Length: 471
Ligand code: ADP
Ligand code: MG
Ligand code: ZN
Image (cartoon, rainbow, N blue to C red; front, side, top):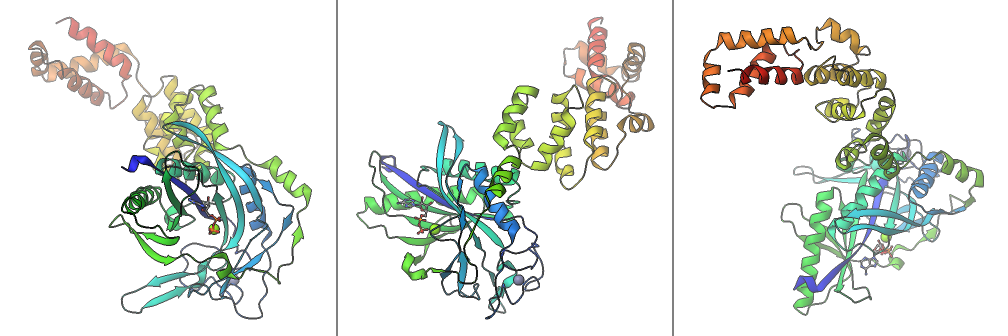
C-alpha cells in the first residue's frame, strides 16, 4: 500500500563554520572545552553587551553560497528570532530572516536511478544556542560554550523523494563545504546536523501534503532511518483516515520511531525583529568576485580529473575525496611518480588511518610508489616504507637500504631458496605429487620467508611453477 505514496522531503542543514572565534564576540570555538569556559557576557546574553560581526564568518557564509551555485545577496541584514528555552540566555537568536545571504542554488546528486539536480532555497548566517546536559544526579545543566558559534543554515526545496536521495544530497553538500573550507563537517561532533521536513502524497499528485519536521539528526544512518520510519507512519495515518498535523518530532535511535515533541510554532510566534545592534550593510563587489575566483576546485571536478588522468576507480575516488588533506596529499604526490595506481594502493591501504593528523611528505610517498613500480621493492616492503613516510621518514631510498628491504630479482638466489625449502620438508613435494595443488601457496610462503620477504613475488611464482612442472 505504501507504494501508492511518495515522500516529499526538504532539508534544513546546519553547519558550524570553521572560524576560530564566535560570530558576534571573540570567544574561541574550540570543541570539547570544559563547560562554560568558552563564553563571555556577550554570548551569554548579558544586557548591555553589543554584538560585532566576525568578518570570517561572513566570508565562509559567502563561500558556502558560491560552492553551491547560489546568488549572493549584496545586502547583509540580521534579525532577532525570539523564543524561550533554557539553552538560549538572550531569549532570542540572531539570524537572517527575509534577506538571506545566499539564495537560489542547487547541487547534483547521484542515486541508483541516476543523477538529479536538487534546488537550494537559501543559505543564511546565524548563531548557535547553548547545550543542555541532562544528568541523573544534578538535573539539567547548561553549557554556554556553544552559544554564538557561527552557523550556516542550508534550506533545500521540497524536492527530495526518498532517504536515498536525502543522504546523497547530504553527502554532496558535506563534501562541497569541506573542500570549500567552510566547515569541518564532523557529524559526530555536531558540526553538521540536519532537520528533515517530510510529507507524503499520492503518486502523481502535485499539491504538497502537511509536513512534520524531525530535528537534529546527526548521522547519515539516522537521517535514513528517520525518513523511512516517518514515511511509513504517515502512510499508516492516512490509510487509517487520520489527519497529519504540522509538528516537530524526534527520532529515537533505539526504538527506530519518531516521537512527537511539540505542535509547530508559526512564524508569528517568533516575533522577528530587525537586529538593532547590527545595522544592515552592503557587501563590496570585489570581495565576492575575489572569493569566487579563489574558490578551490570542487570534489566532482577533482573526481573527473582523477578518473581521466590516472584511471582511479569510482570507489577509490570517493575515499581519496573523503578528506581534503588526503586529496591534497594525493595530488602533490601523483605528479612525482609514474605509478598513480600503486600510489592510490598505498594511500588507501593500512596507511589511511595513520595519515590523518600526520604530515606525510608527498615527494617521499611518490618515491615509495616508484620504488615499488620499478620493482626495487615488493608490495610488503612498499607498504612498510609508506608507513615510515607517514611517521616522518623523508628518504625512502635510504630507508630501504638501511632496513635491507630491496627486492631480490636474482633468479639464481630465488631458485636457491626454493631448493632449500623443498629439501628441508620433502613432504611438500609428496603432497604436490598426490595432487594437493594448494601446497603451492605454502611453498611460496616458505620461500618468501626464507628470503626474509625480499623475493620478487612475480619471479618467485614463475620459477616455482617451472620447478614443479619438472616433477
Ligand atoms: P519553516 O520556516 O517553517 O522552517 P520553510 O518554508 O523554511 O519552513 O521550509 C522548511 C523546509 O521544509 C524546507 O526545506 C522546505 O523545502 C520544506 N518543506 C516545505 N513544505 C514542505 C512539505 N509540504 N513537505 C515536505 N517538505 C516541505
Ligand atoms: Mg526553517
Ligand atoms: Zn563570547
